[in-house]
Amino acid sequence: MCGIVGFVDFNHKTSKQKLEEMTDVLHHRGPDDSGYSFYANSEKNIGLGHRRLSVLDLSKHGHQPMSYEDLEIIYNGEVYNFREIRLLLEQEGYDFESDSDTEVILKAYHRWGIQAVDQFNGMFAISIYDRINQKITLIRDRAGVKPLYWYWKNNLFLFASELKSFYQHESFEKVINKKALGLYLQYGYVLEPHTIFNDTHKLKAGHYLEVDLKSKSITQQVYWDVIDCYNKKPLDISPTEAIDEMERLFKSAFSYRMVSDVPVGVFLSGGYDSSVVTAILQNSSPEKLNTFTIGFHEKGFDEAPFAKEVAKYLGTNHTEYYCTQHDALEIIPKLSEIYDEPFGDPSSIPTILVSQLAREAVTVSLSADGGDEIFAGYNKYDLSLNYFNQFSKVPTMIKPILHWGMEKIDPKRIPFSDKIFNFETKFEKVKDMLVANTAVDVMRYGSQHFTDQQVAELLKEKRLILDTNFNKGVLIKGNDQLHKMLAIDYKTYMVDDILTKVDRATMSISLEGREPLLDYRIIEFAAQLPAHLKYRNGEKKWLLKEITHRYLPKKLMDRPKKGFNVPIEDWFRDELKEYFLLYLNQERLEREGLFNADEVIRLRDKYLSGDRENVKRLWFILMFEMWYEKWI
Image (spheres, rainbow, N blue to C red):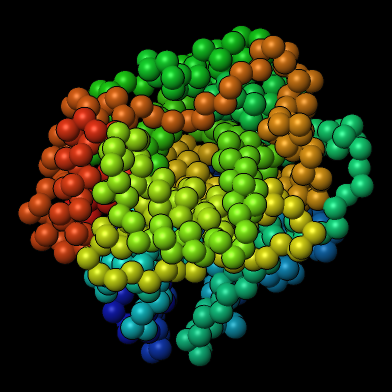
């Protein structure tokens, strides 16, 4: 795992020293080695920088930037099937000097061009500079496990693994994208391809970008989309056949992600996803796996005892740590450094803690993200379906009338509404869900912490809605509502919240995080399976659970899903409430000029006075304010 940085400056102002500064700020992503290439001519300056975390081929042969003929690569990630690809290339006459996947990627691109990516099974953010054709190509993996940002303005093109590299460049303009700020407030993250800044973008998952250095033009293309997987013809397959084939895919995907020249561990929560990963790997390993768990003293949030039972049954070398309010207080000031774009998921705190715990023993750790989005594990799926089905019963002619009537009502003025938890938001969500055309729309409204109306009240300037993956990509009419939600969640919540959270948390302490359930073969097969094999007779993740029960007793696993949540409601009533008073104050908010200060103070004081206000909404604003102070 590594960090990559690059620029093309047609103004001839960016120096090699600046390249080194932009690269070395990513030291945490690659503490083992650094490399820089700098080119200057009459037309432009070009820089490529790399920070290396050595995982495969620990020798100097894995050094980057790496060149072959007129191609030069910098790369972050792992291509797990590189040995198979290498054999194909050797049959084509290619020789290899290293045992690294970097050299395989470079020579695969030399042989097959951009089509080489179709053979890559892994997580990656790749940059290849073609010196002959004067072209830079950026490629991001299918699921979006590895991040890649780019910026283009005033004849300056920048790209990097994290935004903090851009912050080192004096010509990078840090102008807040007000539309993206609205997205952040609603979801707690900024959805791709947008970022918090104007003229700055995330390269979308499953896409590649080409910069033509002669014409100064930028083009983007999709090479893989989960929507296409769901639009394939459904498989005619029995439950037993589906279970057998998925188990085979699991074994292959999981074993791929154990390939390493350094120690590997597993994040074990005790839930089905991480348990099936651990169980299958331990079943095939003669040595004890290292497993790691974070617990909470607050019982409603604590899954550590379940993880301990699973670890004991499987015989892993298990380590657990209980996250306290004191731990949170130590980590909170670091969040804006680690997440250099506003990020509001509070489970980043225990994710950072479990990463720190694992890093004491291993350099690589597997997690089990993606299981809920692939196999229908979240409660929001059946809730959204239920709401959609109920609202579908309302006559079409009546819906707009009801919606119009609700728009005329101020929920704050409804008697006793302050006694109902989060009433204002619930009222606005029901109003929007009433006219939703699909279960995806219902899920989108349900996922919002601030509705469109509330964001309009919260921000000073008028906000226009951005296009996101929530309204991109269409499933064929024959696809059911559940599959539509799974496909969109894979392209939104998973990549922009879950994977962002894990990448920044693990890389902040130089730990490589791997995602075995995000092997593209798993989603391509799962997407073609009937929905009833995932959500079956009210049982979520039925298929994945059936596989798990082949390795772990059902009585050990059969318990309500908790999720990886944090008890900030309890914590903020005590020491942490000081953060609200410090950062959410009238003077600061008015000086920044982004928020309607009176509305923020109203929400803050409502919560601090003991009313039942959604603390996550205040957390989102707090995280933005701490980020703003750090970087702006």
